[in-house]
Amino acid sequence: MAKYLYLDQDECMACESCVELCPEAFRMSSAGEYAEVIDPNTTAECVEDAISTCPVECIEWREE
Image (cartoon, rainbow, N blue to C red; front, top):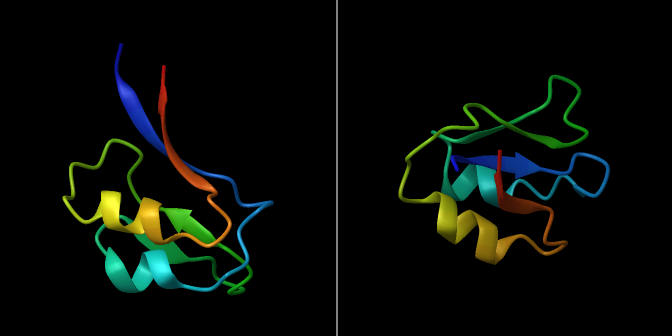
């Protein structure tokens, strides 16, 4: 099974830590209300740091 990067936008508190740690995988929404995954199939090495740093634990790998 393939895995993909998931970010729960309802739980996101817009702290921007994932964007700062891994800008190749995350960006802020146009209104700045939450972070977004740029590419769910990313292979960026910094993703794990973003996952472990998220204060509300709203980023995870999911399986299709």
